[in-house]
Each structure stands twice: as C-alpha cells, then as structure tokens.
Amino acid sequence: MSVRQEIAEERFEKVSVNWSKLKQQTWQQLLLRFAFGAGIAIVASLAGDLVGQRFGGLFLAFPAILPAALTMVERQEGEGKAEVDAMGASLGGLAMIGFAVVVKTLMPRLGAPLAEAAGWIVWLALALGLFLLVRGILQIMRDRRDQDRR
Amino acid sequence: MLPKFWSKSYSLAIKEGFEMHSIPWSEVLVKSVAAGLFVVVISVLSTMFRPKFFAGLFAGAPSVATVGLLLSGLNQPPKAATEAGGMILGAVGLVGSTVTAAVLLPRLGALGACGGAWAVWGLVAGLLYLLVPR
Image 1 (tube, each protein chain N blue to C red):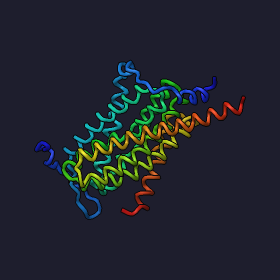
Image 2: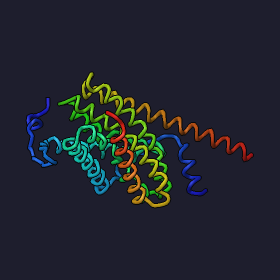
Image 3: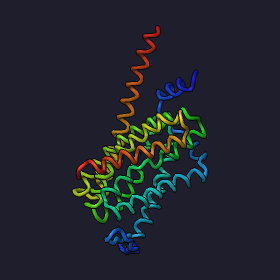
Image 4: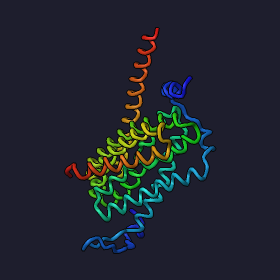
C-alpha cells in the first residue's frame, strides 16, 4: 500500500485515545510548544496595546500549534501523516471562526467566563460536526470508487 | 477579583509618532505564561488522539485566544469583544494557512510548509484587517 493510500485509509479509523503518548512527551517538545504559545500571546498583547485591540485580536488566531505539530509529526511519522494533521487543522480553524463570533457577540452581555464557555461549546460542536461531515463525504467517495472498480 | 498586581501597570513609554503608549507588562507576562501552558495542554491532548485527521482539529483550537480573551474580558469586556472581532479575521487566515500547509508539506517539508503557512496567514489576515470595515 502506498503512503497516500495509507493516509486515506487512516482517515476512516475509529477515533481513539492513546494514553501512552503522555509518557512519550519530551521536555524539548513541551518547551517548544510553550514558547510558541507564550510568544504569540506577547505579540498579541503588544500589538493590541500599541496598534489597537482589533489588530491584536488577529494574533489570537495565529497558527501557533501548527508549525510545532507539523515538525514533530514529520520527524516521528513521515510527511504524509502530517498532511492529514493539517487537513484536520483546517476544520479546527473553521470552527475557530465560530468560537470568535460567539465570544464577540456574548462577551458584552454575559461577561468573559460564560462567553468563553459558550464559545468552546460551539467550537467543539463545529469541529466534531465538520470532522464527521468531511469523513462521511470521503467515505461515500471511497465507496463509489470501489464500486466503479468492481 | 484579580489580584492587586494585575491593575498595576509597569509602564514603558514608547514613542510611536507623536503618541505615547503605556504597556501593562504584568498583564502581558501573566497572559503569555498562561497561554503557553494552555497551548502545551491542548497540543499534548492532540498527540494522544488517532486518527491524525481527528487530532489535527486541535491545531485549530482557540488555545492562545482562550487565555487572552478571558484575561482581557475579566477587566474590560468591550475591549475583549473588539479583540474577538479581530480574531474572526485571523481565524479566516488560519484556515488559509492550514490549507497551504497541507499542500506544501509533501513538496517542501515541515519547515517550508510552516513558512508558507505563516506567510499566507499574514497575507490573508492583513488584507482582511485593511479591507473589512469594523
């Protein structure tokens, strides 16, 4: 099976949690991720204070996790697997638009904790919904392709 | 309520044209440490899931935003709402950057894909910031 076929097949695996991955984290990886997150938060704060809150807000959606994730996934599992990761990240990014719209709308009325809680519920619902939708579409396409071959 | 040090502004005057700005360094420090820790938690969580297609969702999770907006919103909700407005534009850029990363990764490797993704994010977010009215 080619790498591309492996990637396509992996998409249809059942979602599972591998707890042993917790022990496999290295300090170097954790520090890199911390540095990305902390660095972007500093840039967002300074941009907001110096230029304006709307400009600073742009950086709250900076792809902070993506580069670290791509680099580490590539090292561990090969470029193909990382590509799949990036596709999932696109769906997560779409869900992030929903998070930001909800927080912007509810923040002045409900305050920060409730607005953020609502935002996270919307993010989870959208991310899961989009994941299931896209996977379902891919599955239908795969089934049709298989039928055509027969 | 927030501890007293939060409201104390360790100001640094920065000349930007004829305007003087005051930077609350204690707020910046708390935000950056909290955001860094939250990013670590979310990214470790993402590595535990299979398939990678599902795990990738967490790379689009609002990790830095959660901390930034919460800490801004506790003191000044309207300020945080304005930040969230900017975040909507940045999130559109994020989608563009992840699509770019997916396309470039097999061709350029992780470093090239990251560079391309960041460039596309800056371009999309910057253009939207300039073109979309408040």
